[in-house]
Image (tube, rainbow, N blue to C red):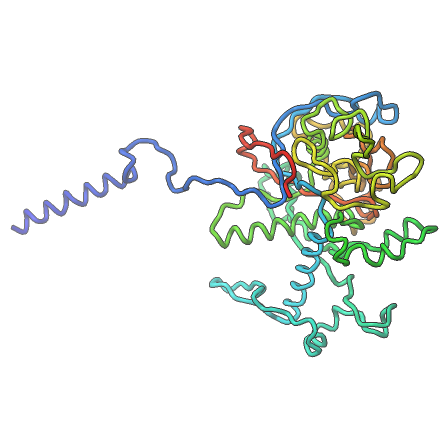
Length: 433
């Protein structure tokens, strides 16, 4: 009886072992990894899809000024998401408030502990900024009344530094075949001022009465929907990293896949998006005119011989003021010029790849040895203080990465690479708000 039972048990164990060799349910066949469920990525709020495609990059008409710098050539671009509007003051304030609160939580030692012993900020703790005792603990974050030009206690904007790590993929890829390859060598520590430079309204226009707009533009709620300005390239890049951090942390809580990071668009992507599928047109709305048949201006710029108010705005206007192009993007021309991730050099187009072209430069805001030409970054779209030439989608210009202006803002891009290869996302048309 015992021998019979032993034989049955042995047979059962062999059967289990045989089944486990090919994974249960596979029938011994190659069926691929079955551990990952079907997945559909969500669309980030405020973004529209720009489909994959190709176009002739460069001026749509004769361009004497840029004929040697922006030669016409055909390029291919993968599809991506882009903010339908420029980043607004209200959206950028969310970033500065997060930086302020994260510094305060750190100073107050408000942390939680993970099972592995590491700590993270306890965002469940609310900070009562009016509490005198708490203000005393956070004294380092304030300008005291006797040190303030206004005679009142105020937040010290210089304290609001956003610290983050980035990875230099390009340099790492070039050295990845080395025997002593160490990824940590390519991790870059960044410390970037979060608060925009509100003095740009005064410093750039010395002989003009701009005190009212300088004092109110960023913080006053009446300017909530106006584009943020006074932000240099490093600050715009830091904002993209913070937005990625915010996006990733919430998706990880829900155990969702983190597919991509927010970033500044490349110059090729920006022009492709601005054209809205109108490959031979000079403006996002087509052209060749900058007014419609009713005589209304189609963008915020410097019309005529300097009649700034003729288009409806003395300075900037709300980010959703004018009609969208055929991809659902607003103010791609005019209002504020926009930072891109591309480095500016003469003859850049002759050096770029003809698909997803990009030229970068490793620059640091604290690197005094960097030649000035390496700090030049492409800005596109023209602004409220530019003539119509700079509104053309093929016109390129530059500014230094560590320089903030009252007429330069930005918007973010976000790539889901797999759907873009099949181009199965459809563009959103019309008003997204």
